[in-house]
Image 1 (spheres, rainbow, N blue to C red):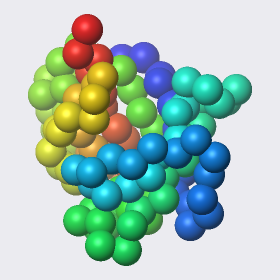
Image 2 (image 1 turned 45 degrees about the horizontal axis):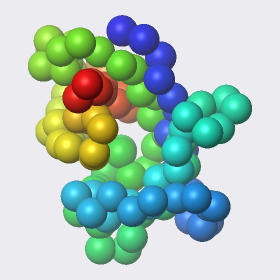
Image 3 (image 1 turned 135 degrees about the vertical axis):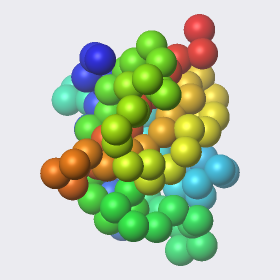
Image 4 (image 1 turned 135 degrees about the horizontal axis):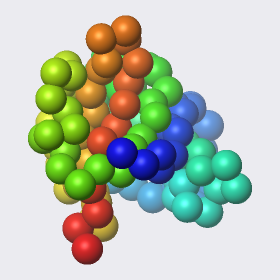
Length: 104
């Protein structure tokens, strides 16, 4: 597992954010942020609810999402976001994490 970014939910529009249709959220490019912060702004009709929409998350790059997620509570099943496949999970102590795998 390798640290990838931290995601923080906001209600403010952020420059350079792109729209992710699957979750109806605007996200910034964490690779362009000096501290690898990803800002997320959810549309009111986003299907995402609960901890993913309400709490920050820490993202990790993994080789196998299913293996890395073993024993974790599924918050959002893995889905395609372009260059990556991502899934969101909750740890036993309530932290929200994103596990991601690059397609290349």
